[in-house]
Amino acid sequence: MQPREVVRAIFDKQIPERMGLNESFWPETLSEAWPKEGFPKGADPVEEFRYDVRSVGGWFDSSPFRGVWEVLDENEEWRVVRDGRGATLKFWKHKSGTPEHIDFECSSPEVWFAKYREPLLETDPGRLADVEGGRAAIQECKARGIYSCYSNLFVFELMRATIGDQNFLPAMLEDPAWIEDFCRVNTDFLIRHYEILFREAGLPDAFFLYEDLGYSNGPFCSPATLRELWLPHAKRFVGFLKDHGLQVMLHSCGDVRMLVPLIVEAGVDVLQPLEAKAGCDVLRLGEAFAGRLGFMGNIDVRALSTNDAAKVREEVVGKLTAIRERRIPYVFHSDHSIPPDVSLGTYRLALDLFWEHCRY
Image 1 (cartoon, rainbow, N blue to C red):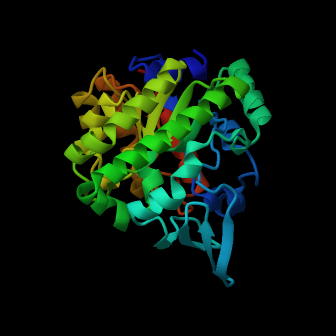
Image 2: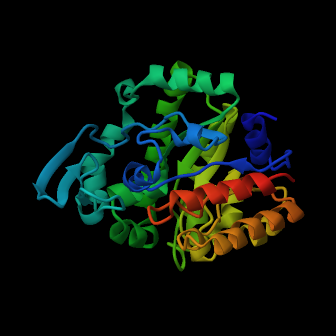
């Protein structure tokens, strides 16, 4: 089977001849740490490691005021900016990670309705960058038998980016009408622009939704609240994607075990990355949602970061053996991203173990 066939089967909750393979990295792993160990600087990890999945774009500026990036303060270590969502954020210059959230102008429904809502009612094809490049990447993936996907944030992440956690999470209980309007307007906005992108650039195999619904100790809000305010919009957007023949993967960090029934109900095909350090377990979830959900991730980076061959073997072989025995549709991936403290040699060992044990 070609890689594309393998991954399509997994997204269909079927068991192909082998498991799939994909990975994400912290930027400094590929740009700084691994070149010191012989990784070709600037090399494409999809080619270098024979992954089955390639991102072909789909990202675009979904800010109410696109192109806004105002530097407010900076020094050698960090930069403070205000973006087109009205968020003031502090970014480190020499390391990756989530920026510090300093301030959010859109912190009330009054500001949302007065300033930030109306720009999102417009359809602006100029937001869609490099349509030609996306078309070429999709065509190349199909010609080579590689599984292709678009990616973007969805409404929970857009609330985090526009309103801020300390504002939008209380508002889900105190002012649900505002949150409902925000989610509906942004879902409509995404649908209108992806209708154009699909028409102009063509259709990949899947859509990768980034939507961090959990943290280390559980969901950010109750399943009941998400059912009321998030699920209708998730079902509508996922339904739109599936009407175009796309399969759907949801990325959500943290402990999302309580939310998996909602994720399945939304129509998601594969859940990623299944953070082991937050309590997620692909074996238990695979048994509980057999035939209803595929999985990507859950290889514990804490084991990989030891750079101890025995511990790496225990994690990888133990998990793949159990996945095979339970017939869980699965794509091999870390439980988030590969950090720079995982050596290149350790990662190559993990991949060697994958290829030894990936057949069902």
